[in-house]
Amino acid sequence: MVGLVLMLTVWLLAAPAHAQGIEVTYNQVRYRFAQQATFVLQANAEAEITDVYLFFKAQNASQTHSIDVPFEPGTAIDIEYVHDLRADPLSPFTDVSYWWRIEDASGAERTLEPQQFNYVDNRFQWVPLRQGIVTVYWIEDHGDPTFGQAALDIALASLESINAELRAPLPEAVEIYLYNTQQNLDAAMTMSGRDWAGGEAHPDLGVVVTAIPFNEFYQSRMKRYIPHELTHLLVYRAVTPSGYHHVPEWLDEGLATANERLPTPEHQTRLNEAVNAGELIPLADLCVPFSPNADDALLAYAQSGSVVRFIRETDGAPAVRALLAAYADGASCSRGVQQALDTSLSGLEIAWQASLQPEAPWRSWAIKVAPWAGLWVLGLLAMLPMIGRGGRR
Image (cartoon, rainbow, N blue to C red; front, side, top):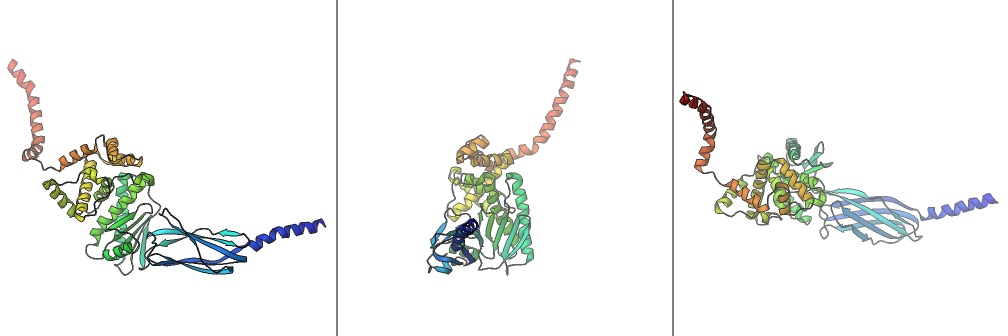
């Protein structure tokens, strides 16, 4: 009798778990880039399924999408929820996590483990080439393997040289997407609710997106754009996520511009014009994002790169790291310069502007003859004791 009661008790305890069990038989997502994402869920339960909720969040987003999904309740459900990416876009080239919560009439509920999908521009077929932590992607009908190899070589060399100065912890992975035209890149960004220029970095994700047409100039563009954007990734890693927004624009963009493996000729031309016309932008005005005006932005990039090169030549790589460390700790634009370089922001500006002034002819001549003049003076000094001894005799 006791055994029968015990068996009945076990059966009663086990029965609700079986009745309340919710089985998921299908859980997938598909999307058309910048158009729509379709989340598909199939599940069944012994009790009627009454509520289904969908949650999804891009890796770099601060907000989670939460949807009370409409459907016909039943013991078996087949849901297709379509999210309009035109009205509510996702940030492109990011990992998106999504998960479901299912509830039934018995009070049982089940929250599925998050799944991920990589939200890339699937209007194109991307060809990958990987070495170490770097993967380069280019469009399938755009160029040949030599194109991708050139980009990969430049990326690997740039990472090494840039980080020799910054000494930042490297990300686990770096992904570089190369569009075949600026128009295709612009369209992708506009469709995704973003407004990017020639290139852009997702510093928190380790992703670079830029446009490099496959023509005779592609290596030149790679040498400019790839190290420029990789610098932003490493600056972000050097100052930690919380410190990145303290880094002034002139330092972040200045480092990126100075690290271009092939300098942009227009920068020096525009800088020279501004120096000659007395129209340099005050350095304090370059602490914040640059003007959207094309000419002003060109000068801002040119000046910022020049200031960074001046700091390197004057104080070396340790000064650059000291600046980043100060901003990582939350220093203001001017305070960071004071802490790292022991001068004011205006003092840095004055010294930098002085370095831009052409040398007077006499100064150039003096620099050239200084070594010979020094030898002549040393020879004269060496002869003085002999002259003195001759006089005494």
